[in-house]
Length: 307
Image (cartoon, rainbow, N blue to C red):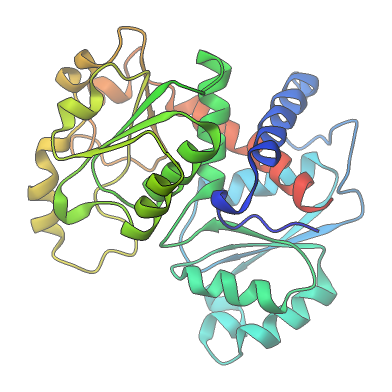
């Protein structure tokens, strides 16, 4: 039994095996209908429970399809439908009950501490479907997408432009494990988690954090961004947008990257804020493949957790 909470928790070998397995499963699946199970069904007769404390489109659908393709079934629970979500049952008690009902749990929550607390009391694996601190499933899908188009990510340059949020935190952890260069262009006020940055540098991560978005994007193999306003943001949103305005990914930013660079966005996107429609819908954009690959990356993550 394995838990998938932070990319930093796994070894380089384990992470590489997840990516390679996802590639293999995607290739072997071919053009089967989305809900048709794979030939090999490691989740046959098993159930995944998914708890959503936050709204979701891609995470919800891709995990549901991933479980179906692995031969299992899923139960989706929203925050307002369960006692834990309403705050009148402890995480410990909820974890004990869920351990009797399911074989694996995925949770999407504002609090990373909630995931850690569940882990203490569960008797089944847990997957972090997004927290305020990280989004490891998204990053694994992004690496899968990059390698599908550009080859091994080792020693390549990834540029993250904009808010230093939970996804960028997970990318920093991934840069250590997959050994790619990561340039983060963001305002000083919205830099990634300082503890994650410090640990990455201690582990010889090729990490550049700069307030100059053009310096971050220079020579990059891939430009990435995300919404400036996350679901958990509680500050002055208009002020944040004003500060981040010069970090918009547009044609000028893309021009300083490599000519054959690609553009990624984990979605949903606020067009004309963090990215222009010209880039989003342009030839270098791979956002739709990126979203589709969530299914395949998560299938491999689930399979790894069930070992």
